[in-house]
Image (tube, rainbow, N blue to C red):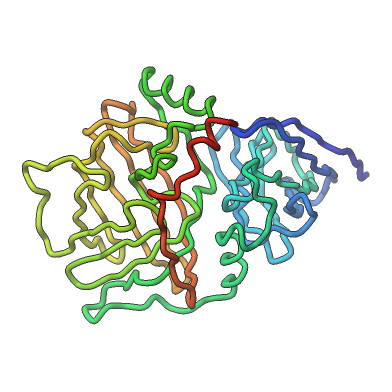
Length: 346
């Protein structure tokens, strides 16, 4: 017997309250003891949201399940044991806020229909492709595929222009009480003191839906990005970190290969940038792992350790998408910054 009901929840993001509605249609399948969830992910204009991960976590066992939406926004999560789950769809570019549903109960053999309408982020962007290149490029190059390109010595060539993404299954860090209090305050005041509002580097690790250009040689990898200071240098020639580093915004980075994964070790940071909403000290140590699994996808893992901020390392995982044929734009901030009065006046 099929039953239908509408689920509406008032969600509160850091930008305010939004109403998210989904259609739940549970069906019991006698011939299968596992459950299944199917549905379509759309934006507020009812357009499909393609190529994004839908994450599901069993709250009792911690087991995770994932599916990626098709070009029509459809997804299927199958083979699910009966139990309680949490469902999460990460933010999409700068346009769509994340969707979360907790206390999702599945019975043995149940076939649940869950259509998800993701809310617009309250940042003035209403889905115009030109306003959010992250979404435009994700769709434009969705069909790009091919083998991993390699350097003359056989190592993967990470070069290319990459469309960055947020962690599809983000985990909050375990922070010391003082750091957690600062993060809470920054979240509540909408980040008006973020360094980026003052034309300063906002974040140390490469996180978020920005464009990243990798230029790789055998001894040096340069990471270019449309933000301040605009570049990082990662030394691949075997040199160690200097013993007496002068703290800087981007720190000092050296890399080595572990199989086909480039491991980047960075230290020597000042304490002025933010890690999301969290502060950090000059003890910050960041390890990044870059694995090009095929032509069009670069898996990026970032591990942030700081005994002055976190109780244990904070790990962020994301996948970047290749955007061939595109080029970076010039980024100028200092003499044209209008963020500060805009943010303070919110």
